[in-house]
Length: 411
Image (cartoon, rainbow, N blue to C red; front, side, top):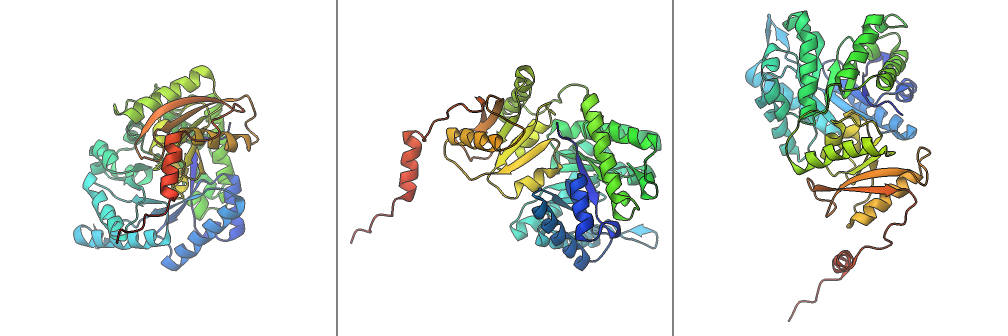
């Protein structure tokens, strides 16, 4: 089975150019990180467009994460209040104008910090997931509220190590991962994972254990910073991380400790049941239909042992899900009946080398299709079985009405 935990690579001088970016994609980069604290807007824009070009040529979905600038320190004090809000708003407008898929907000201290991002996105009529970077004692104190308010979390262990006793950092990491899984929010473990590979071609044994333990804790993604931005071995670092992750997943139990407790809603109940059914029946894959990505994230939090394939009509969702554990995404046209959704699954899976006629797959979807939050159905499909050739009368009538010309006005 393919690697499930995702890899985020920080781009910089060591990874400049199309050839090096192509090597990163081939080595396993799932998300490219633009650190707005280093480099110029012109450089970041050029890198962004190059990532899109390289990913398209490779036929891969690679998300782009913009990491906003932190508070600038002047005369021994960090910028706060209105000055910090203005800086963040400017960074948000720049990143959203580029078209990035994900945003990371540094030095979050309270759940209210997300409001500046929401205000700018409302102003620009665009929405992107916003991740909170845990870097301060205040963020740790308000962890539960921050996870609830934001769309995910980055555990920035380097900054936490400055602010907190070192012996507390592993516990903060585990607590953040657990809480994010409970709420189906992606969680990224960052900082010094393979730090020795900035200068050496191989990591230390302690670093290999650190990466493996983050995977076994249940992290959605692991972030390489200096290793890929300024290091001497950026591509080997990605290959090594992919290898350690795959070995940990193959021989360990990701997210050990049982499935997390989530909300009591319909989607949570259906996805929890789907993960259990997939395990007991040994299905070949779980296939879910999602408009916003929420159903895929709910399934991913249970970290099922079978492939997790998401089908969405929204072209922005695949790159946003590139940060979520185990999710492989396909963009499909909107349909009006569940049998048409089943046919889409069959057509896609039989086009892949990994599946063949006779394989059993589990489909999670909403009825009627296309409504966010309507996930209410599980269906088993044996690939090759005949699916209804045409939609039932009520759906056909609806289609005919949509296609019919408007009546002439009465004189």
